[in-house]
Length: 369
Ligand SMILES: CC(=O)N[C@H]1[C@@H](OP(=O)(O)OP(=O)(O)OC[C@H]2O[C@@H](n3ccc(=O)[nH]c3=O)[C@H](O)[C@@H]2O)O[C@H](CO)[C@@H](O)[C@@H]1O
Picture 1 (cartoon, rainbow, N blue to C red):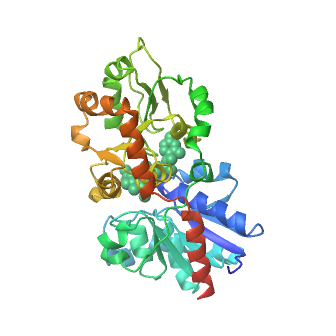
Picture 2: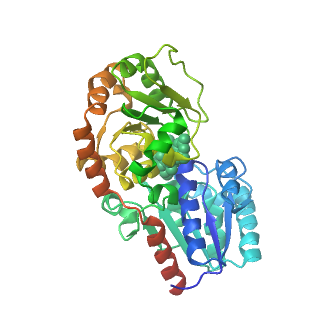
Picture 3: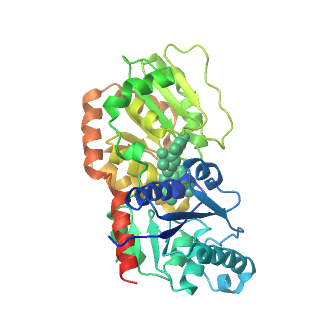
């Protein structure tokens, strides 16, 4: 492995871009304890909440918005972009970066531009189909593209030559032993060990439709002897859950220790964000995916291969009603054998070594510069 001395990581916006960045930073530190790690973020993204507490240097550069489509106007609206790229470039020079690794989100673009102008190696990690706008721009500057899932190069022409490395996952999740952590997790949330737990999460920003449908079905779910651990999502309005339920229904705004939620759960009801899918499959968690209906169906594409391999179920956002939950979720949550089979199928699809595989790829890119 080529020793790395200074690495700049760019990515921001939502948790889906930031958690893989952090997991990769941890792998870098494990292999190269002396490496200098600098992260680039934008002023308002979730990176400001997530990166400094994880112990990494976050440099904020001026924000600029990208249009949803790539066109020549981008190159003619350079004022803000150049300002951001200039700021990114100053940081690359200051830390004498060996390589820029980008995970997507608007902030990656100035980092790619600045690295390209300095002829520094650029590595892009992409988890969605179609690739996000920022990474698609970055692909004009590098051939070093890594992806999270084997389905991506098949589905997208621009990813045809990409290396499948998996998704870097936080160590607490990638290395977790669900059964061993379960007693501590149940105690942490005040859940009972003798009844199944449905874990509800709408991704890093929460999902209003899921919140409302599950809260409305609260009585039916809990009267069927199923407990609920419901992550509301920091950016969502609180919803009403009846107070006179027969078994615990625990609502939390956001979970920093997501592994505790996974350990407590028997079944998950969630969006199909790429990192969520990477995590549920890595740990063999049976899940019902409710893909976000916009954004080019990217979440449906993320979840479909898992569902087709028997690791979960898929339901359209518009079909997630309290009645659907009663008909489908309740019987499944009470069927340990079916859950175990689903969990095994999910686990066969997932992988836990994305951080190491991406690190190998980055080292190769630096060696071949
Ligand atoms: C609406 C939208 O455009 N969503 C996109 C966004 O999703 P989003 O930002 O929701 O990302 P993902 O679902 O991929 O990942 C969510 C991450 O947040 C973590 N988490 C979540 C809740 C919580 O309480 N605590 C916590 O730690 C999860 O463990 C996971 O690591 O980025 C993904 C990756 O680019 C895309 O595939 C999604 O389509």
